[in-house]
Image (cartoon, rainbow, N blue to C red; front, side, top):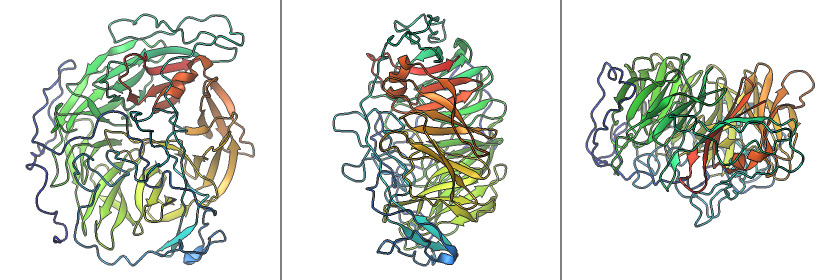
Amino acid sequence: MSQPPNEPPPGGFGAPQDQPPAEGFGPPQDPRQATPPPAGPPQAPPPPQGPPAGAPQPGYGYPQQPGPYAQPGPYGQPGPYAQPGPYQQQPGPYGQPGPYTPQPGYGQVPGQGQGYGPGYGHPGQAPYPGAPGTPPPGTPGGSRNPFKGRPAMVVGAAVAALLVVGGTVWAVTGGGGDGGKKPVAENSKDGKGGGQSASPAPVNPGDGSGDGGEDPEDLNDGRQAGEAKVLWYKQAPDAPGSGADAPGQWITGKAAVKAAYKQLFAYDVGDGKPTWAPVTFPQKICAVTPQKTSDDKIVVAYMSGAGDGAKCNQLQQIDLATGAKGWSGKVADGALFDSTLSVELSVSGKTLMVGRSQSGTAYDVTSGKKLWDKKNYGQACYPAAFAGGAKLLSVASCGAGSPTQHDEVQELDPATGKVRWTRKMPKGWRVVRAYSVDPVVLYMTNDDKKTVNITALKDNGDVRSQLSSKDSFAPECGFTVIARDLTGCLGAVADANTLYLPTEAKTGANEVVAFDLATGKEKWRVKSPSDESMMPLKMDGTRLIAYVEPSYDAGGRVVSIPTTGSGHTPAKLLQNPRGTASIENGFYSKAVDYVDGRFYLSTTRLTGNDQSREKLMLAYGK
C-alpha cells in the first residue's frame, strides 16, 4: 500500500529515540575518564564483524564490454566516440516524485545494516556471482594488496551510452576489476644484495607505558644504499579474533595519531615515542572524522554497548596535541528507518556533520552545540550521505520506488545548513563517491546499465565537464564495516583545474592521467617508474605527490610529479626498504601520508591474528 508523500511507511525497528539537548552536548570530560554507554532499545542486528566481505559496489567490477568511452557532444548529440546500439538509452522524464517506498539499502534491513543502497552503509554479499574482488570461500574477508586487490573503479573500455539532462550529455561506460591475493602477515628479512652499514633498529613505541623494547625482527636489516629506513613502528593492539577496525590517521606538527579498535594512540613524528597516553573508549570505535580541525581537534564515535542493539551514537572530541577529551554526547536516532546503527562523521570549517542513514545533524565542532538538522525535503528526498572538507556536500535519494527515483547533490552552508545549490541526477544514476569536494568531482554508477560516470560540477552546481577517455581507472576506494564514506578514495586527486586518476594496471606498470576539468579531456599522462601501480596522494603546490606500490621484493616509494610545463617525469622522494615490502603488501587496507619528508603507513583493519605480529603503523624517513 502506497503512503502519502513525505510520510514513511508504518512500523519500524524499535521505539522512537530521544533527541539531544537543544544547546548541544555536555561539558568536557576528564581526559582519563570514560562515560558509561547508555543502553538503547532493541534494534536490527548489527553488521557481522570481521574483514569486509569484499563485495564490489555498483560500478566496480562490472564485466568489461568492447568499445570506447563516449565523448560528450553538444546539445545532447552523440560525440565522435559514441557507439550505436541498445545502450544509447535516454532517461525518461522526471515528472513528480512518487510516494516513498523503502527499498533494500534505504532503511534498516536486518543483517545488512542500513544506508543509501549498496554503495553506502555496510557491505553485503557480492551482487554478481564470482564478482572480481570477492574473497574465495573460507577466506575471512580476503586479504590483499589494497590497490590491486580492491574492486577497481573503472571508467572506459566499455560500451558507451549517452544520457541528456538539461541539454548536457552524460557519458557513461562500464568496466571491471581484478581479484585479491593472500595476506602476508610476517616481515620478510632479506639481507641479500649488499646492505649498507647497520643502522639502529626502529623503536617499537609499545602501549604508552614505555618504549616497548625492540621487536625480534629488525625492520632495517638488509637495508640497501639509497633506501629510506623505518624510523619507528607500532605493533597492533589486541583485537577480537574476528578482526576490528582501525580507522583514520592524522599527522600534526608533532604527533602521528592512529585509532585502533577501542583506543587512540599518538606517537612523536620523529622518534615514535608516545606523545600522550592512549585514550581508551568503553566500546569499539565505529567512526572518526577523516579531517582534523585547524587547531588539531577530531571527533570519534564509539558504540553504545556490545550487544546486538548497540548503536554508533556516542561522540567524543579529542585534542590531538594532548589527548585530552573535550565535549561528549549522544546522537539521537531520526525518524523510522533512520537510525544510528552506523554514522559518518566529517568536518567542514567549524562544523561537525553527523550523518545517519536518512538525515544528518550539524554541531559546532569546538563546543558540541547543535547547529542545525538536515532532514528529508521536497518530494521524499532523504539525505543519505555527506562529504566534508573545504565544502560540505549532501547526497539525497529522492522518490524511492517511484518511476522518477533519482539522486540529488546539494552544497550546504556549514554554519547554517542553507542550501547553496542543488543538482538533480538523471534517473537510474547513484552518486557513490566524491573524488573531490572542491572542486566537486562525482563518481556515479548505473546498476541497470552496469555503467559508470565521472562528472565535475561548477561552483553553482551546473555541470562543468565529464571525463572522456578510453581507459579504465582504479583509485582504491575502500569500504568499511563501520561507516559510509563518500570521500574515502585513495588515488583520486584534484586541484582547481585538473583531476588526476590512476589507470587500472592489467599487466605491468600503470599510468597517472591528468584531465582538464573544464573540458573533461586528457591533458597529459605519465607512466609509473616501476612495474607496480602508481597512485596519486595529494597536491604539494604545483607538484603531485604519488605513492608507487611495493612489489614482493622491493618496498614502495614516494615520488613527485611536476604538473606544469612540458615534463611530468616522476622524481623519487623516498624509497622504502625492501625488508618491509611484505608489511606494505600485507595490509588489507591502509592509510598513507607524506608529510615533511616522512612517509606514514598504517592499516585500517586489524585481523585479530595473535600469531602474525601484526603491525599497526610505521614511519619511514632518511
